[in-house]
Length: 282
Image (cartoon, rainbow, N blue to C red; front, side, top):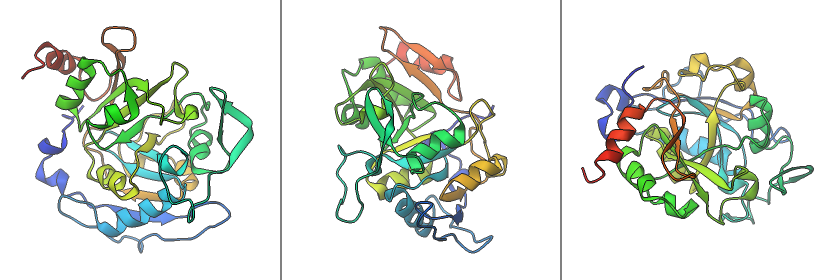
């Protein structure tokens, strides 16, 4: 496993990755529209992804579309939370309220209809709606924006390990849609070190609900080339950034039962988490 960097630790060659928007099949199946770059077009160098790639992808996300995006850990499929949440401000005069599925519910709440970007996360991955999706957020402040009763150790880890390959499970704030919460009323949050993710969050004005871009149980793709063909066929826009720096999923932690629980060991070693918590003032 490679060292998994934060934004400040990214090597210059990693900061200079080019981002290519390969294709789009439209915002919905009813409104198919291609907005991809010409084949093989490079989408910018330097520390930030190309503005056009961000604008096109954010436009699709803002209309409820599903995007394949690179993070520093693995590739993910993502939607903008504000496209499916009545609790997050949006311009409803331009973007109509998302359609519900009267035949499906999570935690007693209606979920977006089949064919929407959010539901396609689950149909593509072939997993249950109750296996909720983590949110990619803009920074440490998001802990209090989308969570409540945050343990101090969770704050320490966020301050020291974000942006990076650490997902923190917290009790969900009222603004988190009920159908996006786990059964224990929690939401998983992560500030990603990917410049693409950071730029998309800013452009959308919203967290991204994002999970690994693979069939449930299959390996998570650490490069664009490793993404399954059926996943590519099911998204509305795909952003190609080559290989990811970490090549491993994020580590997931929780404090919901008192002490630290490592729910999934990923790119950030448990020893590093324990070291940070042993010296929170460092």
